[in-house]
Structures are given as structure tokens and as C-alpha cells.
Image (tube, rainbow, N blue to C red; front, side, top):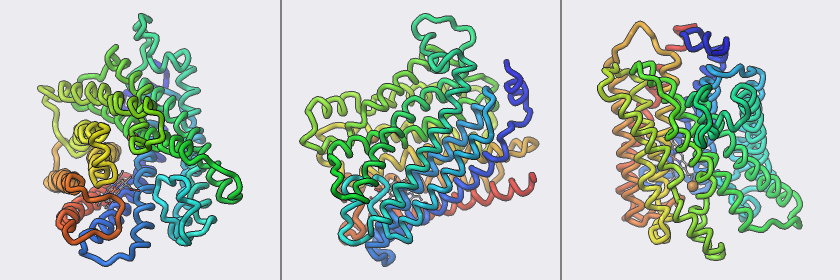
Length: 483
Ligand code: HEM
Ligand SMILES: [Cu+2]
């Protein structure tokens, strides 16, 4: 064990604790604000409020980019915090990452709310350039430059983890644990956190590089329209990036479960062959399955669509299976005392697992033809984000400020947890029901026959917003009390 390991694992303080606490505050506040935007959109679809359609698309863009951004930021903070238990990471790199991230956010917000860019977080070419007069090229450039800065920040972030993993575990292969899979010795095996970190840094770095390439090309095209971009190629790169990036946020956050559950159950989460194998499968498949975003593109070669269908979502299944199953085994009979952090972490893991089911369904060609542009799609990803990544992030945040002398869950904590869970479940079910009723996604205005689902969903969303506000306030108060 290195000095860092002994110091931090034996209850000492994590050298990055303060900046991570600040990051989680930032992430929590943005999650809350973006949820309010979501509530406004859903209420408008339900005819409960009057929202100008052009404003709806600004909110939709901000909601998508803000939520994905906060998920990535909170996931990264979790990963950094726990990697620092095993590696000697440089705080200055994290500061540079956070600085670039915030600068990116400013450019994105400026592009949306000052420049009126409303082309959705997926910036699908040629939409940024063909606004029909709704926004100018400058707004789209600002939005895309913001993404680019965030991407550069992430590359720095992963480079630092990659360097330190390589130095400590004899190369990245050592960190991934792949030698062990093929008969290598089991001594000096990396802990689960390092296996996860190494895997995510490999596929997310590749994803970000593709994203940066297409963003750079789009920016050049916006400034010099004669510079042609192949739309199908751009779509491939964009969805490769988007798919990998949002998945990476969950794969980073789940590290909190590997590291914190043992505190509660007294049973360490071990690196097994199955565990290493499941993560190895993720590294390959999470990249290979982005084709499921192109099932509607008839001009794609048939084999790519077949691939998208066959391995579709099989990418996540081994890992989700292993993680959810192990979690249940660890919890069962361990006599663990439930508090808010561990309840949220378990909810996040189970929500992530459940959310993969409607995703697999949508990954089937026959279903996709029918469901793809319906609210079935936001239905499935709100399960593994709202009830997955975000629950894990709030669980981790609550653990950061946990009062070690108080083991019981207060009445208020129970109320907040139940409201978040039940509100969240109701909210996502309304999306799935809407999708099954063929209600399209991304429509600012809904027919009256479609409005019941949105109205009920707005009610559930309000409950989620209130519960989340409760968690953010609780976190802020605990932070203030401790300092
Ligand atoms: C109270 C919580 C939330 C509410 C009320 C809400 C509401 C909405 C609504 C109404 C839409 C548009 C649906 C449509 O296409 O017709 C949407 C889309 C979306 N939401 Fe949420 N949402 C919530 C939480 C989240 C969370 C936690 C995340 C991720 C961490 C998230 C990520 C997204 C994304 C990526 C989109 C797609 C945007 C697009 O189509 O361009 N949402 N949400
Ligand atoms: Cu995908």
C-alpha cells in the first residue's frame, strides 16, 4: 500500500475533499435548475402553462446539455475522489479541468440564452447551421466551442489518471486488469475503482476525440460554409461521442458503490475475473453499439445496423448484471444500517439496471422503427439517469457530508428519499406510456389527446423537484455546519 492509500483508506482525509465537495454542490444546483426547466417543458406539453415554442427549444437544449454536463461532472468528481484513495493525483490538474468546464458552461449558456441557439444538445449536423433564422452562426459557434473546452478539460483529467495508473499498475493493461484475465498473476491486482477508471478513460477518450473532430469540422463549416461536411459521417461521429459520453458518466459514478458499500456491509468489493471480464466487455461494446442510434438511416451499410441490433445494449448488460447482482449479494444478510447515502446509491444501481431493459427493447430494429422518435426514448434514459446516475451522485454527496455520529435515517431523510423515488418512477412511467401511445418526442406543442400523460408527469416531476430541492438544501446546510 502506498502512503496515500494508507492515509486515506484508514479514515484520514482525502486531499481533494474540499474541491470535490464544491463540485458536488455545483452539480446539485445545476441538476435542480435543469429539473425545473424539465418541469416547465412537461407542463407546457400538458397544456398547463403557455410556453412560447421557441423558448421550449431553448429550454430543451439547455436541459439536455446541462443534464448531460452535470452527470459527467458529478461522475468525474466521484471518480477523481476515489482514485485519489489509490493514486497520488495532482490537484492542479483537477482545477484546470474544472476551470475549462466552467468556461465551457459560460459559452454554452451564452450560445443558448443570448444567441438563441436551440438545436438540441446533440448538435446534429447540419442543424447548427440551418436554424431557419432562429439563431445566428455565432450562437452555434459559441455553443460548440463550449463543448470543445469541456472536452479538452476531460482529456486532461483522463490523461492524469492514465499516467498515474500506468506508473502504479505497470501500464494501462495492468490497470484494466486484462493480464489477469489471460492467466496473469493475481498479486497486485488493481482495486475495482482502478479497473473502472482505466476502462472509462480508454473508451471515453476515444469518444471525446471523435466528438472534438466533428465539433471542429462543424465550427469551420459554420464560419466558412463552403467547407463541406458529410452529414452521414458527422452523424456517426456525433452519436458515437454522445452515446459513449453519457454512458461514461454512469460508469464513473458507479465507483461510489464499489467504494462505499464496503463501509456499510463490512464486506470488501473484490476484483474478480468476472468483474474484470465484465469491464473489458464494456470497453469494447460500449463503442460498438452506437449504431443503435442509426437504425433509421437506410443508407448505412446493413451490417452496421445488424451489429447495432445484435450487440445492442449487450454492452452494458454483463457489467450491470454483475454490479446489480453483487450489490444484492453484499447487502443481503449484512445487517447494514440504511441511511440516505446508501439508500440513494442502491437506488441508483438498481435504477441503472432497470433502465437498461426498455433500452434493449428500443435497440431492436422492429421496435425501433416504431418507437424511435417517440417519448419511449426519453422514457428509457430518464430511468438510468434520473433514477441511476443522479441518485448515485446525490448519494455520494450525502455521504461526503455525513455525520458519522448519527447512524439512523431521520424522518425527513425518509420522506425525501421516498418522494424522489416514487416521483421519479411515476415520471418515467408517464414517458414510457406516452411512447407506447406513439406520442413523438421533442415536440413543443402536443395535441389535446396527448396531454393527460404530460399532466400526470408534471405532477410527478414537481414531487421530484421538491425532493431534489430538499437534498440540495440538506447538503448545503451540512457543508456550512462542517466548515
Ligand atoms: C424532474 C426531473 C426531469 C424532468 C421534469 C425532465 C423533463 C424532460 C422533458 C419534458 C424532456 C423533453 C421530452 C421530449 O422530447 O418531449 C426531457 C428531455 C431530456 N432530459 Fe430530462 N427531465 C428530468 C430529469 C433529467 C435528468 C436527471 C437528466 C440527465 C441527467 C435528463 C436528461 C434529459 C435529456 C438528455 C433529454 C433529451 C433532450 C433532447 O431531446 O434533446 N433529464 N426531459
Ligand atoms: Cu446509445
